Length: 292
Image 1 (cartoon, rainbow, N blue to C red):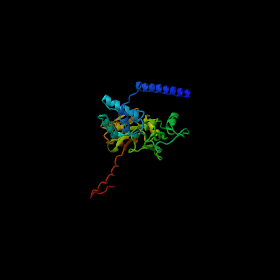
Image 2: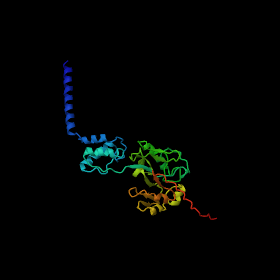
Image 3: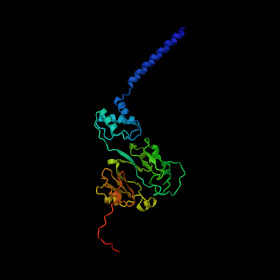
Image 4: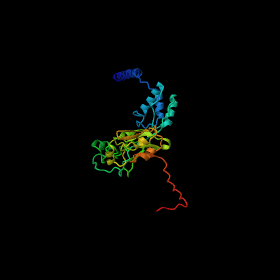
């Protein structure tokens, strides 16, 4: 009986000493976490998409609190939550934040099955990354969409799908959060985040082919040929030409669409504009005789 009692006493003493050691260690090596981080994290959408530039919402919350302590939240934005969430975060942290113009993903490739016919058959893994690593893909254009849907799989918001008729990805403006996951998934960089524009209207060059005009036109009927007609037509200096490819600056573009009319290959797209009204027939002049 004495042995059992001694064993209980010894075990109790060891447990007490271990508890004291753990208590001292917890106080000595405790890592302080600002309670505002958890509060900000609760306001964030919890998508953990990485569109903000951090690994997840927890990293974004930590950066926002540190930015508030430094006196500025510039450059920090949650594309999923948008201005509504960022305004709540700014109110919580007692900061003012500039609401950036909303963006949306755009697919800068117009080479559908009709305009860019297949010249080869790919029999490997159906992945854009794998196909791109093997070469030009199934068409003659080494810059355009590969059509395997890596961007579709990367999107957590069901905002992008492949059109079965054209073989190209299409973005749903209402669902797109501009998280940038699709832009990172595309091995050829044909998906770009651009400003939505007033009334969701925007103009952009739907091509990334940097080959010379004759070569790019041979592989795709609607590719940019670098002729520079759009550059000369634009009065706002919104279009630049480099490496045989035109690019429209969304900050300078005034959506006049003159470049769209000037492009000989129809490589420039105007999105969400009303359809042009049909030209009214000119009234016939009375008394005018028809000449043979």
